[in-house]
Length: 363
Image 1 (tube, rainbow, N blue to C red):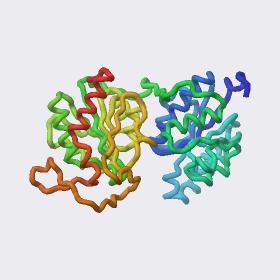
Image 2 (tube, rainbow, N blue to C red; image 1 turned 60 degrees about the horizontal axis):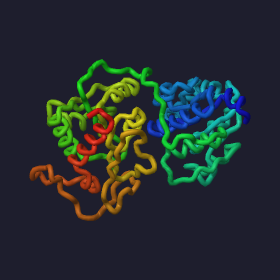
Image 3 (cartoon, rainbow, N blue to C red; image 1 turned 90 degrees about the horizontal axis):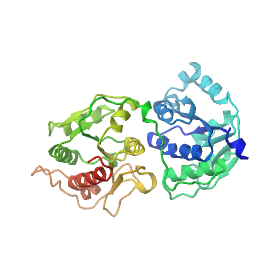
Image 4 (cartoon, rainbow, N blue to C red; image 1 turned 135 degrees about the horizontal axis):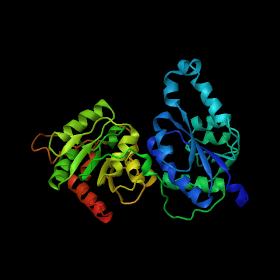
């Protein structure tokens, strides 16, 4: 493409889910805007995450999709007209470039209804190789890299520019967030996640809350499910400085994150959101590999489980070696589960957080 053509290019991005994956796509948009001034993006995204593309100034139109909900209620989606409305919305405009940044069959199928040349990862690089059959242009982006870097390279090769910056920036416009009025220094603990093997033990969270309280910080505990609410209440019970937050939508919670002194998190989408906002953070990893999909941003520290079986990338722990007793249980006989997290103690986590906050000038 010529330079003048690139300045008017209209791009459709397909990246539907999950929370972390959607956030990981933002730096690629920032790269493209810096390389090709005037470029505009529309974005197909799951309805639950539709707020995220709105935070980037170069996103023009958001096209919500509800694949998760429609799979559970296919008849309702069909006869209720939602599927028909979505197909109309996605096929209204002719795009200069369509980028399937998901690389899955479900996202590739959506490109059938789009007008414009479709770019995506080739069959050796896509998460599901069958997805590449639906692309007009198959892009080679080697695996084994962080998800953000792979997406940045996919966009650069699809749109024809070189990556000028070694590290991507999400480019979130914080003025679009709902910022809280409260000012006292506070930390946020993201304790909830999906896999059992990604949960740091509650008694470690409790000890960490005590350390934060002794250092003069309030500790805020968000939640999204009843199970997470119960866990938050258990953590908050050990100190008056810890409090369970009300249930918030993503935009409201993002505002609280944007003003936090720091964040501690297990491997969850909210860790990626905190990193995208450049909030000093410490992320805790046992079963998963932060080298491929860890929190990506400034002032981030990843703590790895020091176990031979980690990262196992399994939802259920299959470790059959000796169990480690909880050294904080004071004779209660509890064991650390999953065992690999016995190598990441609260003192180590808090020390790392203080270092990150100090380096960022938030300590």
